[in-house]
Amino acid sequence: MTVTQWLRAALAGGAVCALLASCSAGNAGAGAGAGAGSSSGAPRLTVLTHGASSGDIFLAAQSPGATGPEIVSTSGKVIWFHPLPPGSDATDFRAQTYLGKPVLTWFQMVDGVGEGVIDNDRYQQIATVKPANGYAADFHEFLITPWNTALILADAPGTANLTSLGLSAHQQVNDGVVQEIDIKTGKLLFQWDSADHVPYSDSHAPMGQPGQPWDWFHINAVHLDTDGNLLISSRFTWTIYKVNIRTGAIMWELGGKQSSFTLRAAPGQVLDKAGEIFAFQHDPEALGSGEYSVFDDESDGPTTLLAHSRAVIMRLNLATRTATLIWSASQPEGLVAGATGNAQPLRNGDMFVSWGGLGYMSEFSRTGKLLFNAELLGGGATYRAYLLPWPPAAAMP
Image 1 (cartoon, one colour):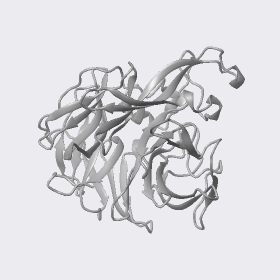
Image 2 (cartoon, rainbow, N blue to C red):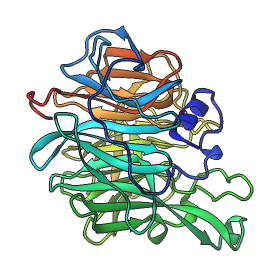
Image 3 (cartoon, rainbow, N blue to C red):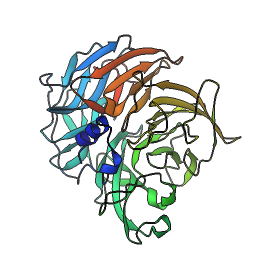
Image 4 (tube, rainbow, N blue to C red):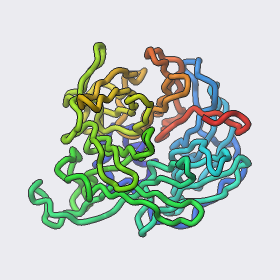
């Protein structure tokens, strides 16, 4: 199933991840270059609440008849759009810095080939990144590190004896993999495999269709903590893992069955029905001073643990091993995102949120006030969205 089909399933309220064998975007190979874009045929955004912070909106809309990386002003004007061929997908489109210069990056799957793409500030392709070791590329993440390497995700098919869980002694599974890749050479610098560190019994994932692998972990993000170690998100263990970037060892787990922290809610905040701060989550971000943000889906389609999706901020106390929910902002229309989404902390303290498969995006102040709200027209959706400065003459975040 493609990203487009996945998001449309979410919009239909279906059993999104039960439909997927994995989030693989296909085998590695050559992709299509970007070149100059056009606003012709671009998915359109309608602004419902005006008042966004400065910057432009970066998204990769999955819309009927049009998909590709797109830059839109906060008034809804299309600035740049790179349409991909029919049947293709793009995700995680944003501005980043590579070798000290501003670049545009995204993940794309074209003709069954999945790869990360890097364009310079003249919209010319300068590099692509593919997984090593023959793994299938996963569309969730394409992050350039401050030391000019790429952090990407991949899906690793395997077999495990899961009779203790009522499954087969030769159960097919999809494990989640993080890789750090040298962008210039394609050399693998680091690899982390969920099966080496997390027991299958930690999963809340529904069983797959007969004959299909069990998507027990469903890796969907790898980010950097403030100390340079990794934050890895698993949708189906409801856990954020802090992982040592040198050894691969888990330093702590936030949420899920093996949480290193006791979970609490500050006054005015609530935990979900499972007593968790988040579930089926995406996009952990380190804010500093022990605070972390997460996009909290609270649903995978069949299972819903809170009446609405939300963005959340938690404060961790390593001494007392407590994690406290201190801030949240709910989906303005009161809806639940069955899949995808992200919550981008802005430098001014606001939070810019993509509501994933719902097709909405919003900005909230730290007091929780809705400052901006917009919707993709025609049933469109975007996995992530970012509010970033562009053209590159502006200061990069």
